[in-house]
Image (cartoon, rainbow, N blue to C red; front, side, top):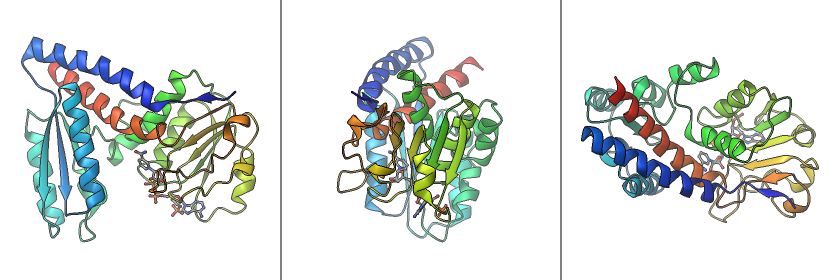
Length: 280
Ligand code: NAP
């Protein structure tokens, strides 16, 4: 029977541990770890994500600061808000909810977040550092996946990993993290030819394509490790997980696999950022 890589379980047990760490910081220093979340515009899905992140912070005793900006905010106005948060000693982590309205240069705004507060792992500098094996907070979903693989003692070294998707927030950092753990990595995208043939070679498969059940179950290699980062309104991921248990070595369920690990990693990295600022 395949191993279920249970992100819900791992994130719940990590929350217990994080609550203790937060309590310790508060008792020793009177400092409350604080995450500032910036929401630009009125996209309902983004508002829901920010609310969920705020609720998760509250569960472990982190303060969350919500900065809501209007739909017509400009790049320079957003950068100004970010630099205020960079300077604010009471803020330990900054999250700019993606996507921002079209008139904003999102990359420029992400890159204005200071490295030590980039707990969502969105800056180019953080990505570069992480890729080179230097200290940086990684993209939360990709780190969440790596934490799941480590927790379940999945061998990565020497394995052929295939990542379907190359987005800056997921596919690219995922590929670098797997490479840093000595996987041989193939990165597929919308211009990839013969996608099914690549997927068939995957000993570790990561579906990060953003299309419901796009990766077919009959493409999946026997005894592989199957990671599905997708989550769609029809309660499925990017991979058709039909009959998956009889076929693979381990897999992430949808829901309850990768999803809970993303927010959990944001909490973890915010607590770490606060601990580091206290140590300074
Ligand atoms: P994205 O920015 O839309 O990127 C999708 C990637 O898939 C792109 O690199 C794109 O290639 C590639 N792609 C699109 N069509 C393809 C095709 N026909 N064949 C092969 N590749 C194709 O999406 P994302 O933000 O990375 O998210 C990916 C998935 O992860 C989504 O399902 C999303 O919901 C999920 N996600 C989950 C969490 C979580 O917390 N659980 C967080 C983030 C994302 P090009 O680069 O060539 O366009």
